[in-house]
Image (cartoon, rainbow, N blue to C red):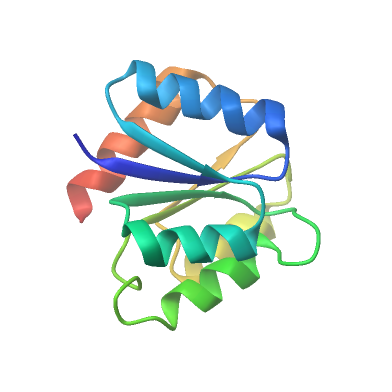
Length: 122
């Protein structure tokens, strides 16, 4: 089953997404911030990365930019997940190379549909 890396500074949201993905049969790894997420992506080469946008120190946008600079990681599908309701955030994320943009709160059926769709594009 594919491996998915979740990068989110909110422990409750990170663990909720991780459990939902594990229940759906995925291997789900979790990172508490962008820097740790980049290190984990390099170490594990996941099949998909799900990342919050609004994080302290290294934002989701900065995390994506840094991952896209690494030739070994740049092809991994990337999905933003955020509480930001600004349409520009989703547009900017797509311009930077994100596959999708999911606004919180979201249903797990929507999350799984986007995960399956993003993995299918890999």
